[in-house]
Image: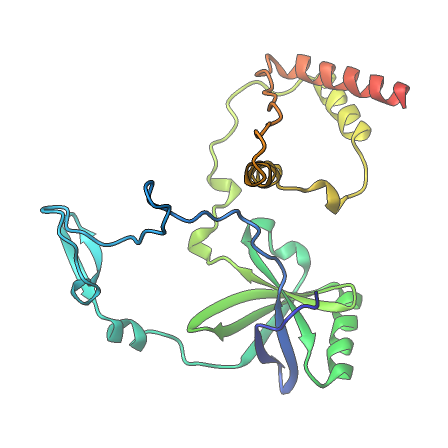
Length: 261
């Protein structure tokens, strides 16, 4: 099925503008269930109720409040929130280009593809420039009443736009507690290097499957046909005893697999 654009805009780089279409880079495959009543198997609705008497609260009587201290709220109306929304825009402004290593992985959030929307020469010239210079653009744009910061990069012959998390959402590794245990021995370091060497390989996208979703869908399909569902047993791993023994067992297992192959 061909990808469908979900938004249109313009890449603004200095005085130049490149028309683009935005496509989702991922799709949600989560299994979603409907809430049904047990007697009639009809869909039920959720309602807001008062915790004091259990009475239903109508939508008109519901207000949004931010708790600034226990039991004390600042009430915000829809008009208040609308006045705080960023101004609508169709521009994706690139403010600077940085090396890829300048942005650590925990900053990246959701990927989108950017495709050309008319001026293909300027679009593919930018793709080639990003590939040659090995740079990522810092992007700012507004979409659906929300302001975003992102990273623009080239992937093959196309542009990819990642939304980036805000600074207050990202935890630096410097904030983690410092290791307090003993340092690994030279033997453990050598075994760890061997283990990494044994497992070197290529990235295979087909290996990344949602096994839980597959089990649920298999269960549903069999039950829909009137069959007694059978689920495969899920094996649990034992808790490792020590780093030395874990590495030794792992290396021994890999050596056996390599000899068998």
